[in-house]
Length: 236
Image 1 (cartoon, rainbow, N blue to C red):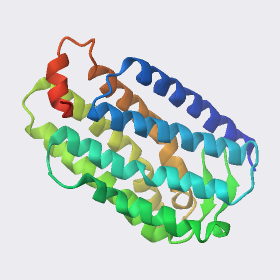
Image 2 (cartoon, one colour; image 1 turned 60 degrees about the horizontal axis):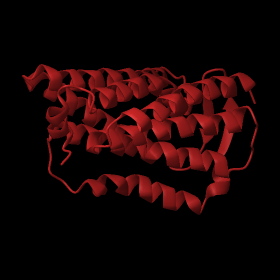
Image 3 (tube, one colour; image 1 turned 60 degrees about the vertical axis):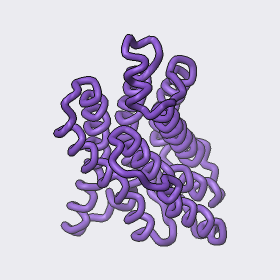
């Protein structure tokens, strides 16, 4: 295993836990903020798992399995965050958790098939079953979120609401860069990036954690627009 990956993961985890600590203290616990705080917590937890696997070299198959359970809930949470902001669809939101719950339960029966195959400076690669199906349900909510945010930013006339949308859209576009690069290289015959996509995206997602933190603080009581942002986040 390459210990540098564990070091980078630990550094990112520390920063994300610091963000989480501040959000738990200073951010108002409304709907939008609760979702964002949960996402930051999951991102920090995943980086901690990579540190344990690559630096501490914990070899049990349970650890990559648990890492995948953690990240599988991030895209549906992000989609729910987007829908909470844009008020686009009035659906039963728990339905978005069916795919990650399916994979979490199914994978419990085949945990020994999980393995960390390598650790590099910037990412870890894994062996896990149903990779293509997992990837479809992983990337689809992210793409839908980007489309909804782009439409929201274009149509929203209120500057304050538009700023929140722009921050989230910028972060979402940033984290989609690795998949675009990975799929491009895959068609060119190189599978190195695509095999480590979840790990690379979670490194890039540190920027999204910053975006989420900004939105939470911007959407908190000490702002003059407290009541306005309560409405924005759906808080009653």
